[in-house]
Amino acid sequence: MKRRRGASRSSLLAATIFVLVVLVIAAFVVTRAPKHQSATLTTQASSATSPSSVTSSSLISSTVTQSSSGRSSSSTSVSSSQTSSSSQTSVSQYLAPACVTPSNVASGITCSWLSQEAAAWKPSQNSTIGWTAYDTGASYDYEESESVSYMNSELSMLLSSGASCIRVDIGYDPWLLGNKTAQTEITNIVNQIKSSGKCLVIGDGSAEYYRSHPLNWSAYQVAWVQRVKAIAALYQPNFYAVVNEPGWYVPMISDSRTNPQFTNVTVWSDLTLNLTNAVLSVSPNTKVGVEIQGGSALTTNSAFYIQYLKTVSSYPGIDFIGYDVYGSSDMTGALSVENQVQTDKNIWIAQTWTNAMSSSVFDSDRESLDAHWVEVLYYYGLEMHASNLEPFYTDLFATYTCGATNSAGVCQGQASGYSLRTPVFYEFQYLATTYGGTVR
Image 1: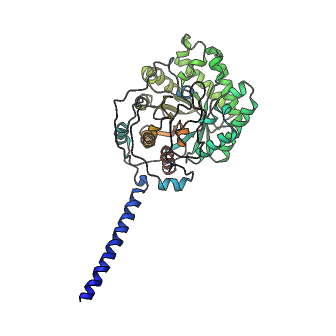
Image 2: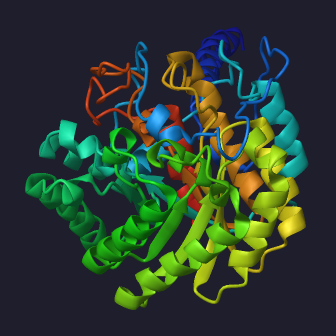
Image 3: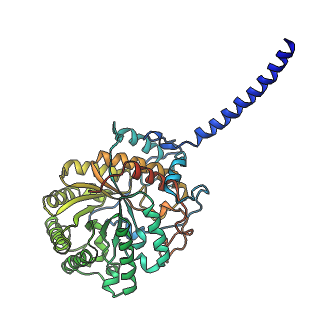
């Protein structure tokens, strides 16, 4: 019996060691398990300061983020683990970092705000929604400063994101100025989007040329109709946002601040009808829509926008209306306006991010916040009964590190190209592949 007891003690010791090893392995597996076993937001609020809204004073003085923000600022690094471009493997191994409130909270979006709104907007049951990724490298006049290989790398990254559509806000400068090379580059990007099976969304990119050579309001409207008709005829997009925030056009129109017709809602409604008819005359299968800016421009001039959206929603040729939201007040303001518009057309969150400020949107301390925000954006879209979500700063899907900046301090490319992936990419990819639906 003693010998048997001695033998049992050794066996017990060995068994104990085995159990401990199993427990350690199990604990490691649990910590590396996918974040999305359930679709709930898990945030940790830290050092949240009082939110202050992004401001823009009026329809006339407001500006949209594309021209002033574009690609911006400087930053530091990307997590070394964020290097995979394999969609399924990356999603299954991805664990979102705890939410940390960044140093700049001018947009009002903090970790505590996200947690609060997730609770308010999360539905009892998740449903599908369309997801679109912005190709900023081919938008406006950015293609003139980027190589073809660089643009192709960016598009490849976007195509792997799970988005149903790719959006390009095509600038008209290459045609206005006769730049055949740039025309060919844009056409190549469009053809790749179509051949990939993704739907093509085009937004009006106007022409940067008009910033230094503005037209008067009457002449600009004529040029605008000609522009969208030419682009629609060339590319036959699935969707075309023919109005890209009224306030954004202010610097391109010489009398925008003095001509009362520029703030006349009837003039804008009639212009929208002309733009819609121009597109449909050459691309009858294209679905046409408009989008408006957020911020105080929306709330201060809500009567203008409510009337404008109600009027254009009555046009048979209009299929969607879009709200551009870049902060907490933008998001709540758009909800308030839509409650008054009550459109029967599809609703898009047509441009959006956690911040619109060029000085901080690329700050690396926003990395975890941006990732958690995408999940709240999904809940917000469901709350708005939206059919499409279009995050704007998709460069941040790859890295928060800017490569080179131009004289205005605008980022002209990502330092490491588009081989890396950040937390916001994986969050977007998970939601787009899990809850993605047809864009309407």
